[in-house]
Image (cartoon, rainbow, N blue to C red; front, side, top):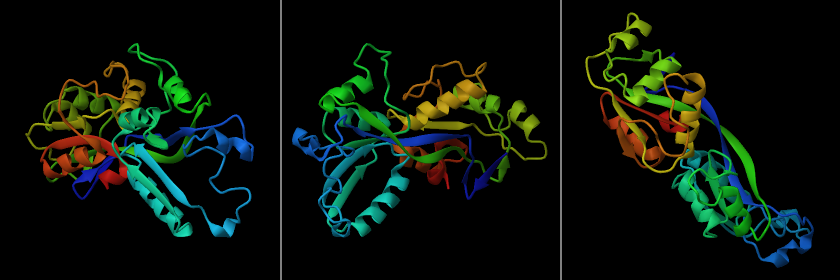
Length: 268
């Protein structure tokens, strides 16, 4: 059962929101000599010779998952309150963009909703191998930070509760079900006045870990309907792309008949 909160609602699956940052095989304080600036270097984040009361100073820049932007903003606020001399910047551009920027050495850490890929499907260098090069031979660490439910958010006038099975969800996002009063939806929602209007699907136009995790859910829960391989790019054959979690959420909020997938905080 999916219940509308205001004009948005739903929950489909929980994904792990993680950070990728450089690790080190050398955990001694001398590791700072390597000069790696990434967030997870063990060299100078607190400083063995620095009093904890003195706090952390310096600047860290991160980029990536827009789904975890709200959670990271809360963490940054708490961290900077406890460490007035520290600045942490995070730009929610999407998991794909964040990983590319991290591997190019442009940011200290990347937010991604799926771990760095160890194999390549398009002939390019695997993400994990590129990250090891960027980290001067050290492996990048995937650091789980928070669990983020992925919501199926919809905007259908007069409908406060909606039952969507995995198969129905897959058919909506593949375009097999095109109207809200489709017979299959009506059968699963007895007593609900579903309007005779088109379903308007919105999906992430950028490379998105949320997209990948949502499609993994469809593969696992509705594999006979959703046969496309999960990736950071939306594989459905219907809908309109919008950038980032803000984009798809705003589109559904402004569009009667709209539906999308987004991290729970963006739906609520």
